[in-house]
Image (tube, rainbow, N blue to C red; front, top):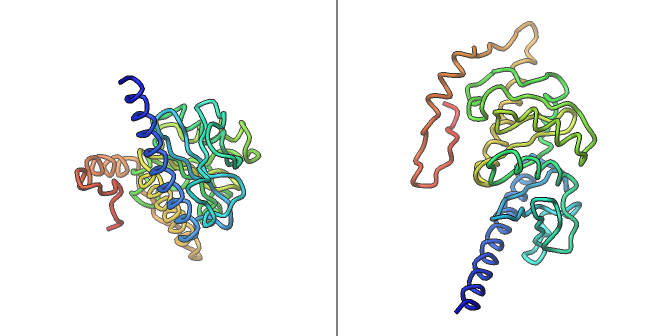
Amino acid sequence: MAEQIQDATRSGVRDAIERAWDDLVATARRTVREGLVVGTSGNVSVRVGELVLVTPSGVPYDRLRPEDAVAVDPDGNQVLGKLTPTSELPMHLAVYRSTGAGAVVHTHAVHATAVSTLVPELPLVHYMAAALGGPVRTAPYATYGSQELAENMLLALRDRSGCLLRNHGTVTYGDTLDQAYDRTAQLEWMCRLWLTASSVPGREPSLLSDGQLREAQEKLRGYGQRGAGEADVPPQS
C-alpha cells in the first residue's frame, strides 16, 4: 500500500509539472507574440511545490517541447531537464525566496526599458500603478545574470509586485502566470503612456497624488470575479 501511495504521489507531481510547463511555454511565447521580448530575450518561471520551472537559456520559445522541461530546486540546483536554465536564474530565485510569488515574468519590453534609462521611478501617470503596489521603481544597473542585479531588483520590488531594471527591462511576479503576465503588460502600457504624454512639446503630463493613488488601491481591492478565474487587473476606464 505504501508503494502505491508513493507511486500515486510521484504521478501527481509529474502531472503538475507537465501542466505547469505547458502554461510556462505558452506564456513565454505570448511575450514574443505581443512584442515584449525579441528572439530569446526575457524569461519566465513558475513554482510547482518545492521546484521552480524556468525557461532555458538561448532556445527560441517556439521550439520548446514537453521533454525540454527545466526545473531547479530552491538553491538553484538543476533537478530536471538537460537544457541549461536561463542566465537570469538568480533573479527569479531571489523573488521566490523573498515573496510568496507563484510565477515570475522578465521582459525587455521596449517602452519600459526606455523609461528605465530616464527616471528612478515611473511617474504616477495612471492609477494602474496601484495594481503593482505603488510607484514602480527602477533598479540600478548591474550585469545580467549577476547576484548584484538580483539584489538591486529586490530593493526596487520592496512592497511592489513589479519593477524596472535600468538599461535592461522589467520584472513582475504574481500568484499565477496569468497574473504575472498581466502585470508585465500593464507596466509596459503605463510606460508607453508616460513616454507618449511626455513627448508633447511645451506640455507636462498631469500626475496623480499619493492620496489619489491610495484611493485607487482601496478600490482595486476585491476587484473582479474572484470565483470565476478572472484577472485581478481591471481595464483602463
